[in-house]
Image 1 (spheres, rainbow, N blue to C red):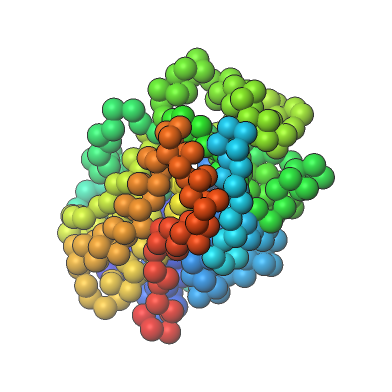
Image 2: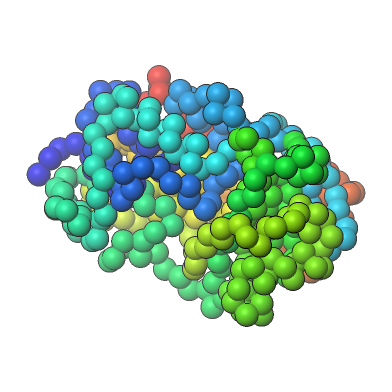
Length: 365
């Protein structure tokens, strides 16, 4: 049984924990199923809070080519409203972000093991290669649950995440430069932002019932939405049907972990799942990683950390969930656009309210 933490998952949450631990000289081991960094579906937008947190961890997103975003555009059918964001945000692929965070964690001395964790018990993690033992385990597996530690999914009509990545094009650059767009439709929305190199990240969060109406085909659903929304069709452009489609199902948006097992610190989407419409998933992941590492270092139990982080996440998750439920109905979408026209300052207030407070600097942890 080792004393230093095992961190299961080398995404933003796990790497933030590793960087924070190593900054204070604490040994840790990162375990991830992928030896090389992939490009996860969620998290291609970085809010201003996320940018602040990354800067605290020593990550220069400008050097990574992050696309600057200053404007939010809301679409409902043929209607559109534009609102200035409270502060500058960014578009950056998870591949670029995760690669840099992993690089820094390993450069600071974190140990890395490539293995697939099959199960988890008190004080141990069962991998495909071997069994790992530690008194403290940080569960940072993102939206992927481990057997015996699944998050509850009580919604009758669950949410599916779908992503298209389209190459850079002058047309999309003219349409999307400097903006993040949300195209609202009954049962879901499409979020679009440019990322490093000018590529377009197009993510769709949709109720399973709405996807079923398109025959269960993401391509058919995109085609139907584009037929009904000229602006979306323009952004998809020609040949989008040939792009790779990534999906993830049964996302438990709105769930917050309030209790945990002894020695098990739950991070990122294993701690709180904020609706992706808020664009704050990365921030919550990083905040939880820093908070868990700080709790471990100061001798606070996993249960103390989990309850404190649940309290911290409650407001942004609840507000984002309310906005999401409103946006996925025709009446709510129209109300949102009317609000953006009449009181744009209120929209920016909502945007600020859906942010988790930034983590303390490493100098204070």
